[in-house]
Length: 358
Image (tube, rainbow, N blue to C red; front, side, top):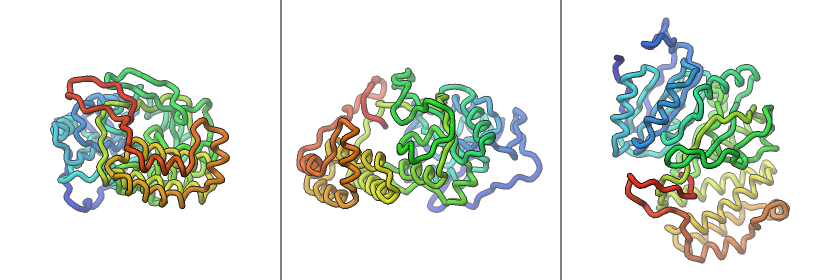
């Protein structure tokens, strides 16, 4: 049995140890000096699904991987469970934060520790749907020379049953290179492998926010790469509707800030479809997710966001979509009481299949 590989971190991260001297062999004979993929997993109170998540990663046919778990000051048994897996498999490294800092900080710490040629991101309550996901993505990324290479995503419920196979914007009908301008979606960054050298050269990192942190990283990475390689192959299973996700003022503000940044970016890059999606996202947030702000604060945010919106883009996109976006809808949503789509929190042993993602 190997010793537990973990670090406790307070404040800034430690110096990186990325170079190998000689060969580093695991108990199963995997040479860890030639790591193909680093799987980065932020962890916060994820004890319930962590075992299923790690089993799907460690069972991959691509064996020369490393798994970097960043425990974000969990208060359940997550830390003990993560350390127990690390004690049994030398490919796992566990970093423990002394205070909760959010998934963005955790992922960025994982990126600083990563040694592999490619990076994969995973949440601790999700899983890979098959044992050859990483091998297929890694082989295709190397064969095509793609900086970003991915597949399609499925949704699963609390009991790991598939509830949706073809998620709009996250399922590819054909295998080929795509230009981001023809794609223009901001979600589902988990489905892809990212070449580590590409991320480091362009200093691509997650913004340190509590909400809406991954879309900006994903869009910036896609725009920087220009094109990406994608396949219909299912590369990720995303768990939906199992969390009682409550927003305070900080979470709501972070979400609005993220939407504003993507509205600005999509306007400057003339990405009309993405621009419409972000305006609609803000309208939905005013209606369902920003109740903690109060009507006057929401109204102030609506006027700020209004300046970031190109309304000519919105008018053209309104003609293509069923849901019409306008400032007057934002105005009325801001001054009206928020209508929650979130489930009421239930005991942990009760299953709930809701309609709100994590």
